Image 1 (cartoon, rainbow, N blue to C red):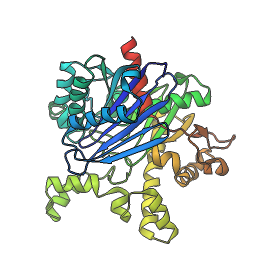
Image 2 (image 1 turned 180 degrees about the horizontal axis):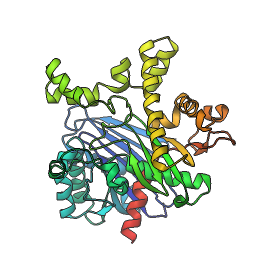
Image 3 (image 1 turned 90 degrees about the horizontal axis):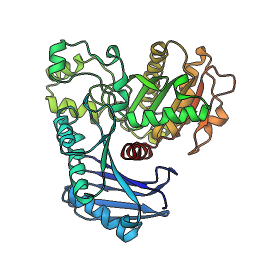
Image 4 (image 1 turned 120 degrees about the vertical axis):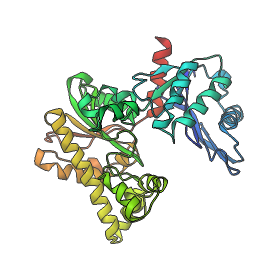
Length: 399
């Protein structure tokens, strides 16, 4: 570990994901996860040199969790004192309109992130706690926050504005922010490298398909539209989220089904999407169900693909024509060949052609899976948000 390293921390409401990254080589040196914070059966996991170590123990709070992370580094390696850590990079979901770029942390920045909690009540509280504790434990090095929303701050007002009364929207900071921005930015840059093109010279569409799913239109390296909105609920069909729907459904559920606001919120975010349509949000299980003849699973798959194709078509219009490349990333996007094939088939009228043999190959490498005569390149590029955060963190502290 001769290079400078960055410790990347992603603190959620009851979890802490962490990774020690060499931004220069791109190597993930070590990493792990703290789960079930605040519960009696907490879990800590640590990976280093191909070995995995896990323990179950009560994790009282985020401070306790991060101290356990330090213990795991000391016990199983590498020792952080010898790791040449130059900064800690924190992932924060919601930066609102306040943070268009990665930012060095000070007390004022922490308070501004705290002020944004109403826009991300499930995510930002954990981020604030994680930042506060990490600043205590690593008080002698700079801390940087990288926001999911920053990449989409370049969207024009026509794309991020909801058709609500303007004063009400302004008072409550209601607009489309977009999420997964770190992934979309990283993957779009990798697409340029894969194609051997200048990032600013072409248009592209990136589909980040995981448990949460989003899609973006990127013109010359700049985001001009994305599917998620005020919250991560808007847009594509997801594992447990509805994505787009008639907003009056919420009113109907309250009036006709007698559901409370909290019950509707849980329904739309945790019980819908693939899970709501066929009872399972794991795509591997959904495909197995389809193979077994389950019609609910088949419909869920079709609804998922239909929504995805619909967004791709609309983004072609936003971009003013065919993009140079459509890229699939994240867990589902990288590993589900059938989704990529179905999407390409649906776009065949635009001259999009998939190479079925190349598409069927599973690989951790960035690759083209379309045929040479396809009007649009179809790519699969593994995302690496931790590396992206580490590189943005290092660039900021070295500036």
